[in-house]
Image 1 (tube, one colour):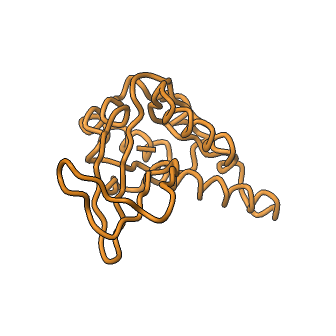
Image 2 (image 1 turned 180 degrees about the vertical axis):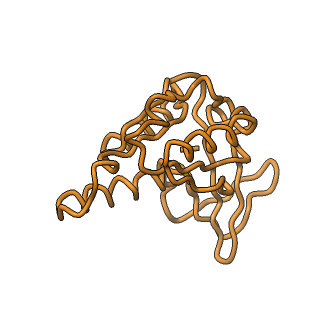
Image 3 (image 1 turned 45 degrees about the horizontal axis):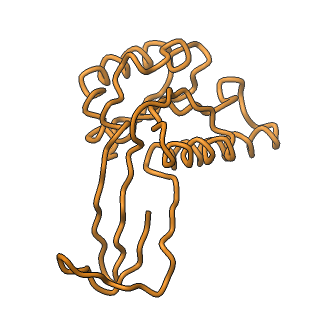
Amino acid sequence: MIAKVSKLPAWDGDTLIEMPIETHPGGSALNTAVQIASLINTRWREKKLCNKFERCVLHSLVGDDVYGQLVTERVKETGVELSAPAVGGQGVCICLSGPTDRAFVSYRGTVERLCERDIDRSVLISERTGHVHFAAYYDCTGLQRSMPALMMEARAMGAPCAAPSAAPR
């Protein structure tokens, strides 16, 4: 959720804004998956892609609330496959965007709960896997211990892995 503000509200106060508050499903993992899916679709149309890059799968948890539904709809619109059970509250970030800086109010929700048992290893790590990208490393506290082993297993199968970024696939 993005609110463009000229000043932050004081406690027990209100700041009126000129622009509507926007809701954009996203985050580093979803944004990366959407871009990869777009690239895959473009390359397939141009017949410039090998069979290892047939699809993009986002391995995550999605909330069973209205925000989780927004994420699920966004994923379906973009051609990204979702390997994610719907449980609990979707992680949400409220961004207060000012003229020169921004501030965030974040709820990690499902991202924090994600762990190895939530990932379909047969899809994540297979002979058909062309690339594995891990995102939201510091937010995915339930997956941090398993991530090095998952990366090593994917590399052993021949899939290039992107090291954990500031913000899993």
